[in-house]
Length: 131
Image (cartoon, rainbow, N blue to C red; front, side, top):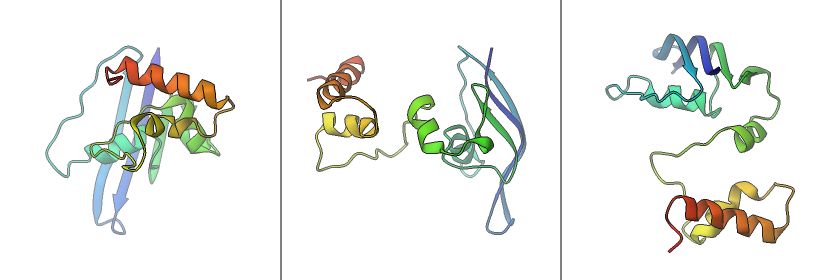
C-alpha cells in the first residue's frame, strides 16, 4: 500500500532564483524505511517540510496516506492526526515540563485533562523518558 506519493513536485525560493526541488517524483510504501541524504542545500529540509505538511509545492502533488494535501482546508488538523514530525532543532518550550510540552498537541483534542495527562505519560514512557 502506497503511503507517500510526490508527483512532479517543484519548490522555488527567492522569486525563482533558487530551485530547492525540481520535478521530484517519489513513492513510499507503507512499512518501508527511507533515508533522505544529500549535501547542504540539496533540498532535504524542503522535501521533509512538504512531507510534514509544513510547506506546499509551487507545482506538483503531495499525497500522504491517500490524502492530497493541496485539497486540505486545515493542514494543522491533518498534521495533528496524521503526521509525526521531529525537528532537527528541538522546539520545546523551556518554561514547560516535559509532560506539558508533550501535551501541547492535545490542547485542541476533545478529551479530559486527566486523559491528556495519561496519554502524555504513555508517550513519554514509550520513548524511555519517564524518569
